[in-house]
Length: 296
Ligand code: C5P
Image (tube, rainbow, N blue to C red; front, top):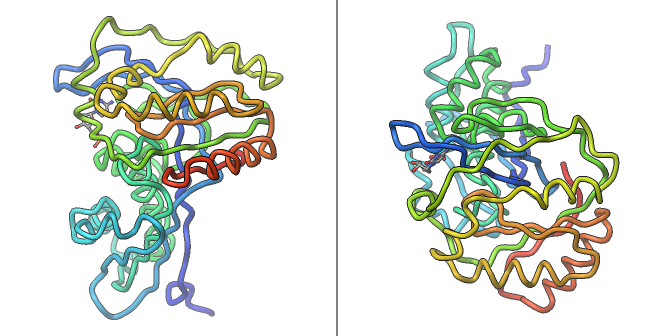
């Protein structure tokens, strides 16, 4: 029988986007309670595993690989995920060393869950490659310890996220739509943005079971907000410039920030209209990271 564990395996780590994000409360430990509709874009990082005799280590590649150079050690979320999975493996697992190659194509610390998606991809990838057979409930528990956004990235499917990120529920069925993602190149600290948030908590959103078309989805989403958008604009003023630029693109239905920023997104009637708008913006703003396409 062919030994699949000697082959190189790859996992996609798609970008997560918060279509809205309400801060609904705060826990005693300082973490914030959220209500968020999370979707995944066609854009993402890729993680490849090449088993080998050397101790497991991380190699960084891709457009944003160099910005992570200091993090290729054990503190990188991918290596932490590997260590967490190893500790959960049973005796039948075939834990091995070798290279994990992270193609980092998403901007770092940018509110689209790059690091969380990478960690979730590492859990999925090594669970497969090591024949570890760690069950889904255990993977979710490991994901939760790695970071608030890692559980939702484990399945990388549209979900309603509550608690601090660990409560995942059904989301409305989404209509066809396109998305543009834009990042100005400034990394934003998530704890700092949460600290700067002021004002009342926002209630949980009322959502339908499905949206028949992009217009009805946008009409509902326009009633929601990202509670971190205002504090992120204080920490990183270019976010406001990016939002205005997305808003003025042809056919843009909604412009909003994702997560704690600084990446913002625009919703469009189709993947094709989003691609065209992204091409236009990329030409006008060559210093920005711009992506356009469909949802994952
Ligand atoms: O869990 P994660 O490492 O992604 O969170 C980074 C920081 O963001 C936390 O230490 C906390 O300050 C803040 N945070 C929060 N409430 C959340 C998620 C994150 O306050 N639900």
